[in-house]
Amino acid sequence: MSRTARVERITKETKVLVEIDLDGTGAAEISTGVGFYDHMLNQIARHGGYDLTVRTVGDLEIDAHHTMEDTALALGAAFDQALGDKAGIRRYGSATVPMDEVLVRAAVDLSGRPYVVHDEPVLAPYIGPVYPTSMTRHIWESFGQAARITLHVDVLRAARPGGHPDAHHVVEAQFKAVSRALREATAIDPRAAGAIPSTKGAL
Image (cartoon, rainbow, N blue to C red; front, side, top):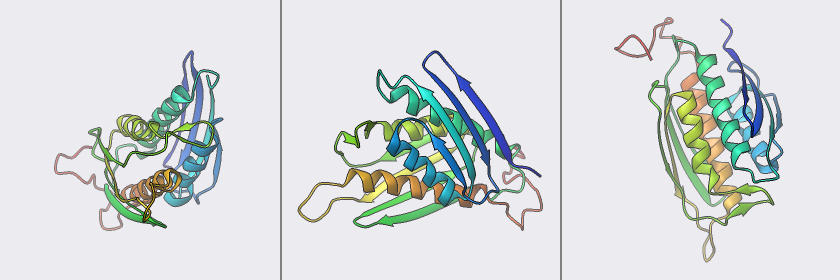
C-alpha cells in the first residue's frame, strides 16, 4: 500500500507544496528561501528515510515567520495524510542523538492527539542571516498540531565548557532526533498484522 501524500497550502502570505513518501530512501528536494531551514528539512528526509519535496514561496521581505510556520503546517498535514488510518504501524518512537557537545532526546506518539513539549536553552537569536532560533519551538508546535501527534523534544546537554550553547548544533540535533523518532514510529510493525495499534481501534 502506498503511503504517500501531496499537500498544497496557499494563503496571502505563502504558497507551500509538500510531497512525501514514508517508504522512500531519504531523497529530498527542499526550497523554502530560508537556507538553514532547508538544511533542517533535509535532515527529516535523510534520517527519517522519507522521500520529501518541499517548495515554499513566502513573504520573506517581512520576515521568515510565515514561511517557516506554513511549511511546518503543510509538512505535518502531509504526514497525517500519508499515514492514513495508521494500521500496522509501530505508533511510538524515540531517539537520543548526540551532536558534538549537544545531546537531544525526542519521543513521539502518532496518537491522533496533538500535544507538544519542547525544552531548549536560550540560544543566539539567529542562525545564519534569516533563521530565528525562537521559531524552532513554533515549528514543532505547528508540525505536531497538523500531524496530530504527541511530540516531546528535550535538549539534555548543550553548553560547551566555558562557553554558550552552539545554536546550530542545538537545533540540528533536534531535527535529527525527531526524524529518527518518526522513522521508528511510522515504520510498519511486522508483528501487528495490519492492526491499528490502539485498544480504541482508531488513532
